[in-house]
Image (cartoon, rainbow, N blue to C red; front, side, top):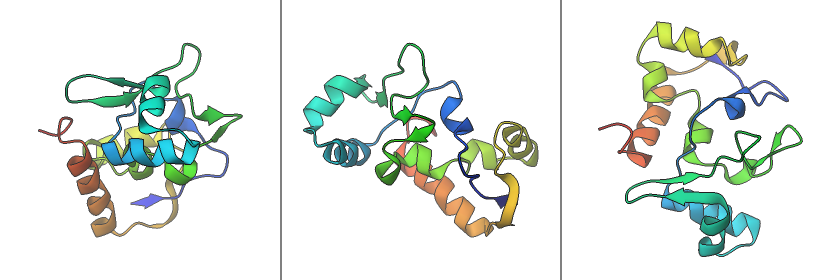
Length: 133
């Protein structure tokens, strides 16, 4: 399989769905924003008993997508960093190609080492076991 993020592309950020955070994600982003973790969580997240996720703003998919760029790119969440190497996308060729319909980086660039792709999928599984029982 081939994958290379395309300059200026934010298609993955525009997809409907939630961005789940690990506690480490929240710590890193809060520090990057110069906020306490409590301030960050109050302003930017929604927490249930087992889940922490970014709030979805009314007229956008992600608060941190500003002027067509990720304003927290340097500390982006595991979920964002590992895309498109999520377990459910790597599960079948069909799913990989379906994702490619919205992701112009799929099918571009150098061949991706399968072990590297699977390691990222495993990182996603470990980070969010509630999504991958």
